[in-house]
Image 1: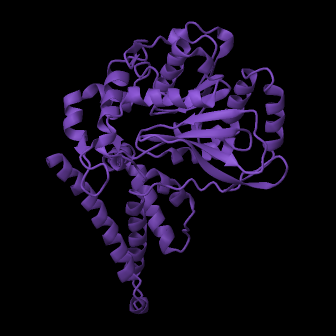
Image 2: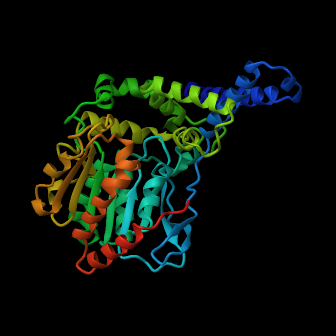
Image 3: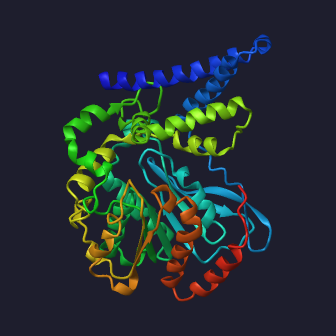
Length: 431
């Protein structure tokens, strides 16, 4: 019960901070206080507004906010989000552009399950929509999944991806971002042996820890410095009585967020201090840079305990993917069995989460793949976020990935797809 009490204690602390922010804003906004020329009143109102918004966002799933896209006919087309496959721990969704012919290029984005929702890839989706039919894995918050649905570890994650790829067919082009890169590589190898006709056309791995030991970072150092027993004792709790997943063992999102912020505490503290003063001066808005970033960054989800612990143990400690001895559902996966799927890796020069060398290690594991079907790219000056959602992605990496997809797609696709990209790239996407 103590683990459930700890979970509820964290939630109570968050509720209290949100209430304090709301109370400070309400009190400082009392009309009579406007007669008192005291900057402390304005500061209290600004602090309250920023605090209330920040702590409220921590338990709310962000909206995709993708309403329309400008297509090559010069018209804005509405975007409808459709659930293609519904599963207890995650769905496969499609961004259907209404009134537009189905494009030949089909892309599956595999989103990370590492604390944030799939909406973290919103800008990635927006950048790809004019040029492709875009699908994405939408993972669920573990606190909302009843215990009766069973476990969900990295093998289950891999099999979910296998099923999604099977459903979309062999003409799909898979892009795995960050954490799922090693599991998506394993899923592709699993299909190469079990169902070769269901393999994707191409596989792009962006900033993923294929071989965490290739280039150590703070993340890998942490993984080696603690034992599995310590992790289970300090990080794992049981969902409290306020949610459908009551009793489920999870790595709580609020605890994950504490870790995220502690890695760059000074930068986050400065960002919030500057935002408070912007609010005081009347320069802040709902959709300014700070709010756009932190509305997403602060929205965290619980991760199942078995997924978190198996990731640390099998990927970071035992290096099962890096040493090509990963097992899925009792079957030993051999990455060398991938012989037809073109594989590209993308890394950022200044990535401090998955440093250069960790992701490109995938190419050495693909021993059955000819060099003509292998590609890699190291983006100069780019950090982790920039290689899939920042300016580095938009200006440099995205065109390279689309060219790679076209060069290795089915024979009938590249010419038409390239023409589509040329026209669509001149148009903007409306959110």
